[in-house]
Image (tube, rainbow, N blue to C red; front, side, top):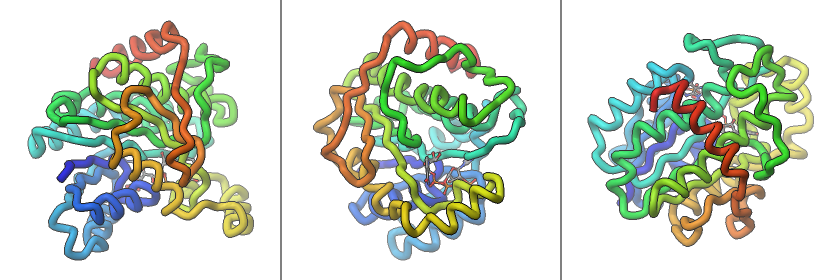
Length: 273
Ligand SMILES: NC(=O)c1ccc[n+]([C@@H]2O[C@H](COP(=O)([O-])OP(=O)(O)OC[C@H]3O[C@@H](n4cnc5c(N)ncnc54)[C@H](OP(=O)(O)O)[C@@H]3O)[C@@H](O)[C@H]2O)c1
């Protein structure tokens, strides 16, 4: 039985992945901000709920991530898989307590920070896995990181790609530096979840109309995460799954190592981890 931590597991695609991994007999730890959604998730698991737990945490701040990691490590010596499905979708110019944009803090930096703090428990697993969910962002070196990490003023259309591509760089870094650890990035596709809840009204309205025509099911969006946790045939190469529901269609992540090192140095300076 594997112990699998899903950050963002109280909702949407992370919750669907949690359900399926419970069906495969594993133990699940869910992290999320909203305790009500966490309790509802556990209640929906029926008899399998005795193999699941929920920890409420705000992962948008350094302190929130540190507190979450401390509580996880208090309860678990070994983590076999760490899955990051936390995410916010926002156009607004706002800043966290650490002065960072929430899109950057939640959709990239918290993943780096939490993983770094949980490495001692991941190293206890025979074949540890770290997976990060993003939108469709193929691994490419043609990305400008000049605005990293301030992204000020924030513009979603310009900044969302480099922020999400930082996940691919982190996957490459982990594979290079942590022997035996499999690290990858999974495209969520377009699934009808809560992710648009703070998007402008016209985008929510458009999704309501177009949604049934263009959306993936949450089952399809969760499938590559579930399969990547269950199999270790891909671990030697950092991997990107670009097609929801198509586990066999994967792309090796090969990126400029100097850029990766620059992003990792900056992430370390920001978080201390
Ligand atoms: N659905 C799509 O079409 C789509 C498209 C592109 C990318 N994605 C990515 O796919 C992943 C899964 O999203 P989803 O569609 O399943 O949406 P979702 O249902 O809104 O899930 C997002 C999760 O992130 C958690 N979260 C957000 N801010 C947090 C914070 N500060 N601290 C702790 N947890 C926080 C939420 O917890 P609370 O609810 O408790 O706040 C929730 O569990 C995300 O990374 C998202 O960016 C989704």
